[in-house]
Length: 323
Ligand SMILES: [Mg+2]
Image 1 (cartoon, rainbow, N blue to C red):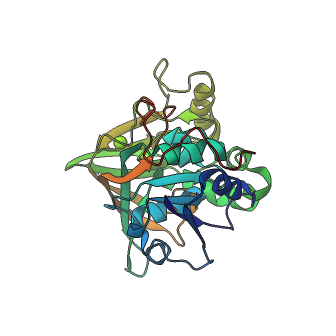
Image 2 (image 1 turned 60 degrees about the vertical axis):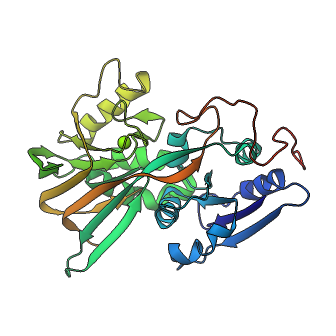
Image 3 (image 1 turned 90 degrees about the horizontal axis):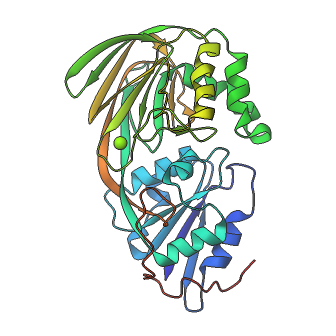
């Protein structure tokens, strides 16, 4: 088994989990290459030559992993998403067991699911065009302000930084959003408008029910509220009803489609998988890339299949160097 591990050493708390994973993964006769990302890495360079491997492991925060997955779009090489960041929402949404040795086992068993990515394009203030992939969600408005406010505290506080930031920003601006979903236009006022490939956020809360990464659709989520206290209410509802199926999400409306354009009445910050883009935007377009990446899934994942005992890379029960 030949594995390429692409690791961002700047992500998260700088833990050694990726090395525990590599130790658990390799058997006699295997090869495992480690690529450490530089600060100014480009995703295409980081993924160069990936076709020569049986497996690629993407280790970093959500922003890094989504950028790498976008570079791998259309590739047949299975990708394992490894949680090295602060929140690791993509891992939470894929739903695999997160322990390094469990992920190593999932790689050896080698079951995969073809999952969707989102692709967002926008023009900056100078008229320059940008395109980026996203695995979780992109948004304009309050959520982008939150991500920006949470940045200085992420390394110390982890996920709590997002909730602290929400409480520290009690008066977000209300914007008028013109939302076009597959040619149909809606006008809404709200503090944030997000396009989601999946909907589980901090605290294992599902913002909208039945938002899946394998249905070939993106979900638009509008938070029609004018204060963080009101936004926290649906989040609090989420704590008692994590899937949103029983009591729904007050003040949140959602639409599903393949191509979505959002125009805002004012200049708003844009956030892509937790990373805030420099400057502000007036509009952006997001489209789905259906089933474009092959992601390693285990039997715990909602995208996984029953573990029938078969294994692509052999001896899945045996771990060469158990912890
Ligand atoms: Mg979907």
